[in-house]
Length: 257
Ligand code: NI
Image (cartoon, rainbow, N blue to C red):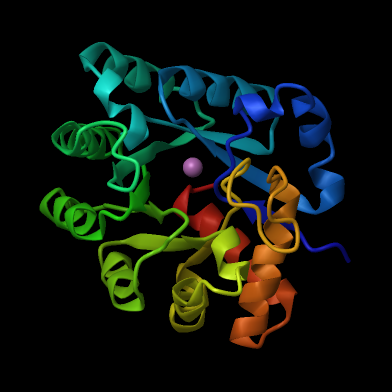
């Protein structure tokens, strides 16, 4: 039987899918993909993600502003996210967080809108999806300070240590691994795959970015999530079906599907 995977993070709204988006989406099921979550990166991409979720039963959306674009955020945008989140196919707030690698928005601005969007997740009782690049300490501190009963969500394309991963799990979060776990030189994600229990793991592509081996360099697509699952299966010494099934169940539990 075909393994059915859920890709917990793919930007199908991204312009790199403009030429063949329908073909990619229509082939998802035959490529073994049961469902995909498309997280917003800004106001426009959040709207596009919601439109895709409205159109396809197996696509879900999150709405929010990526730290890169937090310099463009304002209260009007927050209200639009609030309105968009009324749609039943919007299952989370994201992706939100901090990115100190690119610093596309200044760090104080990133922190302000990370906090505000966590509060929006709390107000709407939705999980939130966290982007953390080279900002582990501040991400963890803000999440701890903003922690509330019912906090839950995903650390997407997790890149920090095993110890931190365990702390995020304690805060109510799932750890999602992507393409980097398949890269020979990236040791930490492999350790995380080994140490974090299966009931706390998710898999993702972050399409169109971070393409796993053996397709590194090409545009990423949800169908390649299989290679992420296969690497985790190899590390955990279990059949890939076990990874597929557990990550599907975790996804459905988190988003109450
Ligand atoms: Ni992303």
